[in-house]
Image (cartoon, rainbow, N blue to C red; front, side, top):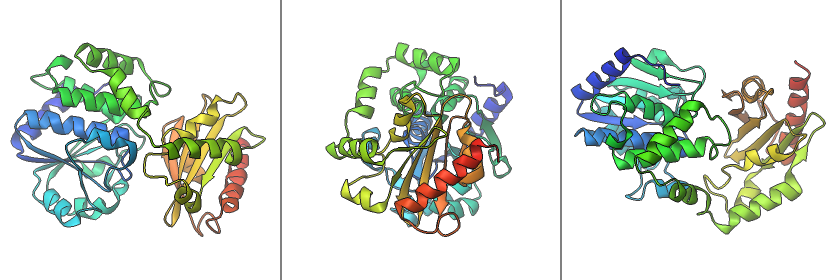
Length: 348
């Protein structure tokens, strides 16, 4: 549950009041929670008359494009000069769903050079608070979207009434929370259900949002899912299910950003599976998603062996060549996963 004191909220309100140009940023490969929390904050700040905009490292792609129907968000990789100009003239920068600048990719250097006052709103372990004037950090909460919701609910003028939030803010935050909880399947707390109740009571159409999230994919996603479950999924003797998507497979099935959302959760339906790992090639490295069942720490596994971290049962990381794996073949990744998860379950 949101535990920040009223003094923190008053300080945030004061910073917003004193600022004219406010920019919201988030992490690389922005997911539904990153986009939802960022847009939710943007619409709220615009309601207050602020020049508010979102800048993300890469353009929004795949099934999440419905979240920005009015046009593409400004991205550092897509329009670097415009992104830098925006950050340079900002009075205030709010970093959301991201523990620090090191997770912002091409925006990191731009951010370190700005003189704007900076605020962090994040739900991950280990926030880099030193770079921020004000930090809202809550690990026991479903998503950054939920954390932003509770922050805004405590702001003057809202005072606990979700109906006073802009409708666009309500929709964006509900969407972000829904994606990060896998439609209430994981990381759900009493506060999460309370948030959902308040937003639905305020007029959010949950059925429409869930349909937009789950039923707007291309045929390629389902065919790729079938191939992975039939031919690619391997289950170790320790109950680790892993799947590897090399660049060749991504090309064959025309996989775009967001098309594999939720794939890593599927093997957890199998009784004997304790942990599920999805590795997806991204240029010169593999992006790793890890999910686990209660009693098995995805976070610890990610921190020890996959150059990452996250939540207790939902974490991520990366594998690099040749630091971690000798090459980019499926067998290179598979061998590494089997070795390190064997060590992990033996307590090494």
